[in-house]
Length: 64
Image (cartoon, rainbow, N blue to C red; front, side, top):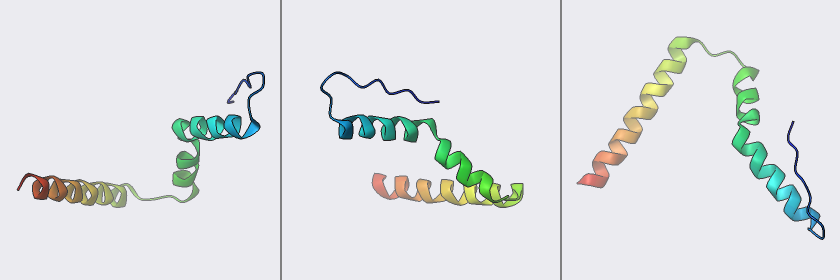
């Protein structure tokens, strides 16, 4: 559970923004989305390899 202490005189919008930032850093939403639908290990591995190839191509193009 996230606890966001609100300082005296602090705007509620700022506190909400801090809450959203903290929530994003925990990765809860991303974890729920991945659990929503089962992906086979072979498909997950293939996606990971494709992402690695894409990143490598970007790095190679940057060094040229």
